[in-house]
Length: 510
Ligand code: MSP
Image (cartoon, rainbow, N blue to C red):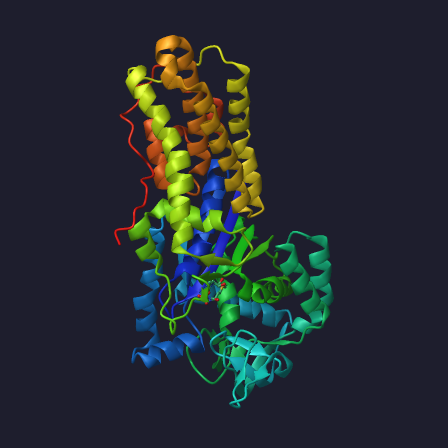
């Protein structure tokens, strides 16, 4: 049986249309999901939309819409964007779906039965924009008398009856869990932040609201709706079919990886495992917090008018170059700055000049001098074997890097081989061998075809469309594009289609 792998993105608030930050997470998860599939896992990749809570209710009201109609209108913008970005998610969950309301209600009841939830009253600060409660000490009083959360979101004073989750009782068990599972939170610096937050002491968590209606009703007390984060986090379990143990995806819980932005780590790494353990359920195996993108040095914001629409980028620069740039440019986990200059630099440098030219040069020589057929393996030299050995190591290197969410490192390993292959072709000069030693030319071209095959195979997770095109040109059957198939050599004499450039240079019209 194939090993199971379950990866999730956060579910996105539908108060706004998707932007570059959202696309980033989904592209990263998609690359990992595709890599796992190629390496032989049975993958479940989930994304979706977060549709309840005060923030969504307000956003709908501002537009004069009822919240259900509003979320019905915005959620498809996310679904459509994922199709545009080639995201291979296996399911798309909306928290307003009946399956989710039913599962979350059952989860709540289980927490009540286990004595983990009690009725009390909340008095304190709340930021609607973050959908988060804050201690006064975490907030800052501004000169104009307003008060803000660490995120800069305005907070308001809330006094209302509320159900509480006994989070304080889970402090030691959480610390014990982190200690026994050193890879649960990554990167390490984020793990340290979470540890010190938990060591600082946990207070019981308010898990219901009474001052608005847009949420899942608390079972048995319809005056309350569940706190949107409890509702939202549970999406990851709902999608596995819980509580139906016979559901087709029941075996995917616990999730192998929740990918999140650094701003929502506390919810995933503290509240979420505590809630699950309290319900007698397994916590997820890992939470990775990635960094944030700025745009040309500035914070991305509607007021600055610099919000990057991923669909526009794809239209202008092409899908795969954008996906490549996002994962190549910034060490995954760090913050990054989106710049068109840097994107164009990657397109023209690494994609067009380095990789595209390598493929184009090799394949057009095969077309011209080998009658368009894949040459035989022939007698290989030490140089040939050295390059091929470096290529052969790539699937394992890439998978190991991706398994640590070090996408940039995986791509750097691939690029080392791209550069080595360019040095090889320059040194071997197969175009000159045509006259002097055609047999050797054929061997060199076959080495290059074999190296290109590996490169195109391992780059599929990041650039699926263009690598499919390159594998077509190399005569690799669609059923032989996983990592295991690399062990089987391509048949000599396979007719290859006429080569065509995969990565055009980008020239600015302006
Ligand atoms: N709905 C919650 C998540 C619930 S998960 C159970 C939420 N939604 S969100 O739409 O506000 O944000 C979703 C993700 O987008 C977060 O992981 C956040 O870090 C990420 N990003 C938002 N802006 C970003 C950048 N500028 N750069 C990178 N990621 C960014 O939070």
